[in-house]
Image (cartoon, rainbow, N blue to C red):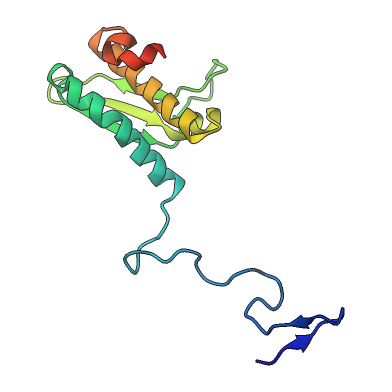
Amino acid sequence: MDDVSTAAGAPRRGTRDRRGRGMRGPGVLPARPGTPALRTARQRFDQLVLDVVAPLDEKWQRHLGLVEYAVEDAPMLPDDWGDETVPLSSLVRGKGTDPTRLVVFRRPIEHRATTHDELRAMVHLVVVEQLAELLNLTPADIDERYAD
């Protein structure tokens, strides 16, 4: 295409962005066609929880037994919930052959954290406190970094 003059007299190149709407198409191409190139907030949070849980579970697996870890967006609160706070996690002890279930609630934690480091620290804090409750230990016994 040839250069075209604008109303101010400056030459304008004929590009796909001729109306100032920005770039067309994806900014990042996926590594494997047909898959998203960037992970969603939910996927990033799931990975963060896995990164926090894996070393703790490996260290305490012998004492914990079978524990299922899960992430849910938000807790289901009853209509008559009287407390001003929203739970950040839930721990349901297993009975018989049912495993213990530790659920981390994504949205309440994300709402309280402003940076990625704060988010990671808060997830770590929540998981350590729940594991300490499960094992009847102090959180500092579960992870020495808890005191920090």
